Length: 503
Image (cartoon, rainbow, N blue to C red; front, side):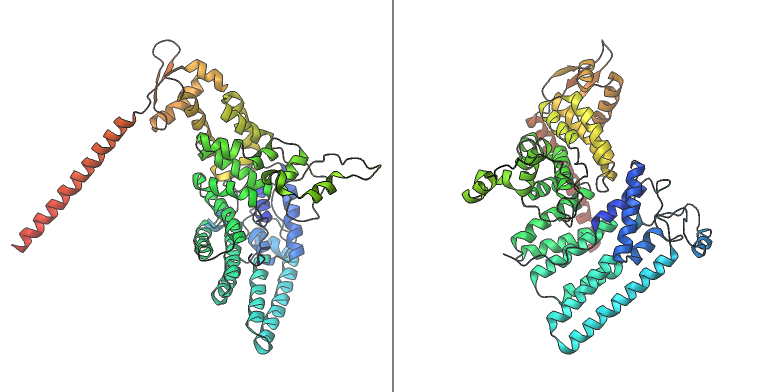
């Protein structure tokens, strides 16, 4: 067993989702108002002066495009803000592509910022004093602990550059492998928080190197979730799917995302990328997914605790007898709604919040596998509305995901038939003939579906051209042979030129 994870609390990734919600044109107004309050509470509670300035400053903040303020001094500077200011690449990683939504600004309070900044300076002085005392009186362990506390402090208040620099300093001077991995994972979360994909990619590679050199079981499993989420953000769903699905039964990285979010990411990545056989075994019939998408509250809790995936032998007889025994006069506890969005994030979660509605996701999976394409298109629209447009990791790729899922359904139906009536297929999908014709035409032109559409005679038919493996191999050999001949000709010309120069 390895040591307990360190540096796993900061930054608070849910805050980045709140920032995204403020800039999301598809977010409901109550959700945006709740996001503003959550950000204000977090800024005040954790004294996040750098993050507050980065988000809400009248001239530099990425959210406060209108220059809204609560102090006269800041109001003057707000009028100096150039209209139509473009966001930097780093800022663009935190906000929705549509820009800041109307009426969703985070108000700037100059007096509050000065107070938070003063509190930050005071705490930094205390940390520096602790490090100086450790250098004079204690050993290397205490010195590294003080430096680690400084890195965590910068991560807590949202100072990205200083946090990464401090983490790298601790990483360079620390010799414990488990702690090194934890530091690298903390930097990955900083990159995910600010949408810095280059930083995340760099440190995911570094974390894999460290884990392969002797990382313990827990950190190996945590890295799967981290790498899977990173691959999801760069649209490598085919690589993300196996990592996210493997993480379901061993998930402990609640600092990264909630378990419900992991289920959503795993189902979506698996649905769009896995072959039908793997899709059946790893998504449709996966016990962890079935328990959450298609079961009652009690079964969801069993899945989240691992009892369903572990099987009936997961608990010993004594524990089962203790659970089965009920005191006289006590009634069985009724099933209540589980707030999966906050599960694992703390014990003080609100018990009255509504549970996430996974019905559209369950319908998407089942209708695709069973070939109920009209229901599948309906579920796809609901999934886009409830998940793809509301999650910061899924939002950017929502158009691509919808297209790929439509393509998958078309391919699944057409591979079973030689000739299909265009009107019949349109009825199966619940769309018009013209829409299906245009949609299929794009995929056919791109070489994604091997078929032709004939609308000259009758109402139109779709004739599939199933690829012949032997013909395909022959075409590949001819193509590669032509390329080889071309390269040899160029090489021969270069050799002749050199020979003439020597002569």
